[in-house]
Length: 287
Image (cartoon, helix red, strand yellow):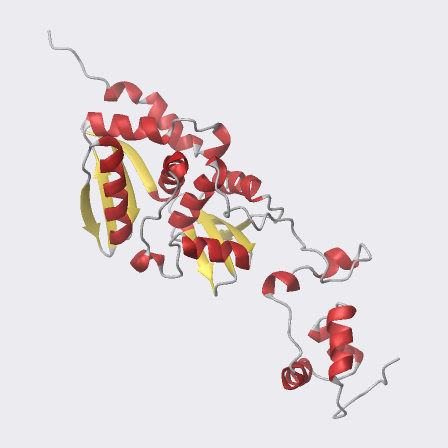
């Protein structure tokens, strides 16, 4: 059994590895056990080259301890780490949502923020994620002063997101990604659910995407290739607005965007608005 050390006496590399990795203790636990500071333990581990757990691994804690498991054995929350490795309709939609309202943090985790929790609840299903959705106050949301956030810790997810062009400063560098044709419109719908708008102005239905200029250009080229309709890009500060307002273009884009969509992979508020006002896209015969 290791000798109990106190004060300025030194823990050996073997002791640190056993406590930290074999027994699953945190640095704070080891510090309390030997009556030293947390900073002292960190310094010793760094000196001996004892690796530390990742942020995701550190989140496992008491959840596993209560079940008699070492802290390093399981995640605290369930998650499909390979969700974005092989896309399907649901994960492509999630990818679009993250591309619009997601934010990567230190290449270790990402979060999705929304003013309504419905879309985050649906994203959790496709990611097989068990963590809770947090609710916070934010003066930026005029209606309720609240916003909802889903935070996901996964280095593998972040690597996949970077591959698809979702970067830490995506408002500047983000580009429209290359996605299999069968899932491309699911991605577009996810982006539209996050940073898109649908409204009626002058008795005409209009759809709009808010994005970085490079992303807007790529999305416009994609829609042009798929439908033959060319969108208008305007600027609001550093944000580009890709807009379609002609009846044929809006009708075709929404038709393709919601084709094969289901209640659980779309924002029903926007889809409901489209269905309710679909008659405005019909041509009236001249008498």
